[in-house]
Image (cartoon, rainbow, N blue to C red):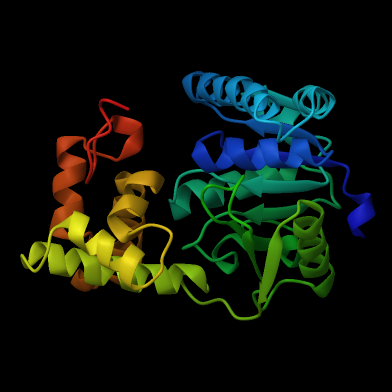
Length: 290
C-alpha cells in the first residue's frame, strides 16, 4: 500500500480531536467520514464545521471554493459499518479507555477493508495493547495529533514492535499530505515525545499549586514569560479538558496499581465540581463571560 492508495479516511469519535482531524482531512482533499454514537456530539461537530469554514473565508484564510469542497467531502454518521466500510485509513479518537478501544478495534477489523490501516490518536494507550484485538496486527499503530489538531503541526507516528514499515511509511506520508510535521517514534514509550515532556511540566505545576507555592495564573506566567511556552500548563488543561487528564491518570492507575499514578487532588476537585475547562465554562480560569 502506498500513500496514493489512500482516498477515503474514517475518523471514529466526533469530540474535539475527532471533528478537527476530520475537517483537516477534508480540507486536504480526502473523502472523510466522521462517526460517533452520540447524536449530540455529532450535532456539535457539524456546528463547529458550519461556523469554522465561513469564518476562515471571511478572514481570507480560505477560498469559498475550498470551503465548499471540504464541506462536501465531509459527512457525519452514527453508523460504524457505514463509516468504515470503504475506508483506506481509520483514525480512532474515542475516550481513553483500553476496554472501549479494544472492543472498537475488534469491530473496526471486521468492518474495514482488509488493506485499511487502523490507527489510534491516543497519546497514552500504545497500539500493541490494541493490535491483538484485530487480525491485521502489522497495520495497527498510534497516529497522535496534538490539540488543536487544525493548528498544531506536530504528529507522532509510533512504530511499535508489531508495526510494519509499510504502515509507518504510509502514515508518515499521510501526515505530510495533511501539511503536518510528522516524527517517527521507533519505540513505544508512554506519552511518546510531547506527552512525556508536557506530563512532567503538568505534574510539577500541580504539585506547586497544591503545596501553595504559587497560583495557577502565576505558574502559567512563569512558563509563558520565563520559558517561552505558548501557554501555561493550567491554561492547557482547560483547553484540552480537565476530565481528560483525570481519565488518563485513572486509566494508568488501573494498569499499574501505583498510587503515584492516581489523578492529583487538584484535578479530582475540579472534576467533582464539574469545572472541566473551556467546554464547561470554568476550569482553572473562568470562561463564563466568553
